Length: 145
Image 1: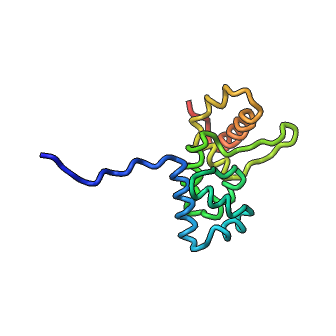
Image 2: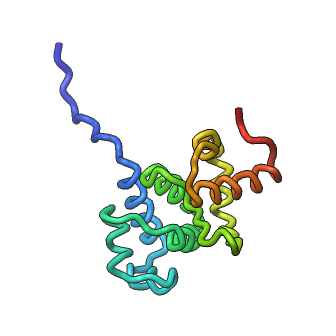
Image 3: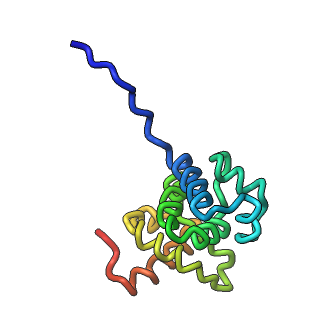
């Protein structure tokens, strides 16, 4: 006996989940892309790119979008991290400390399983991310494993 039914759609990629979360968040707020661009100090065409999945927002804009779409912020950041394969933390200078947005600290602690990978890294950006993770984890507990 053969069972026919609608095949389930393939699972969304992290980039598609991010685009979907951004579109849904904007729709929930009842605003257009131009308004989003104004609120996050961005450009409407880039907001369209983010919502279509053709481009990922840079970390600074990600923070502003997550703040704007507070209810969906964690899902947006999680999808971004999966799509990008990195944490949204940027250290711009080794001589002048730059403290990341609190959301970056949340992400760093949520993805603390990346600790061994970062600990082996030799780049300035990885050392900066590791430093931020150590600082955040020192306030929340010991790093895993």
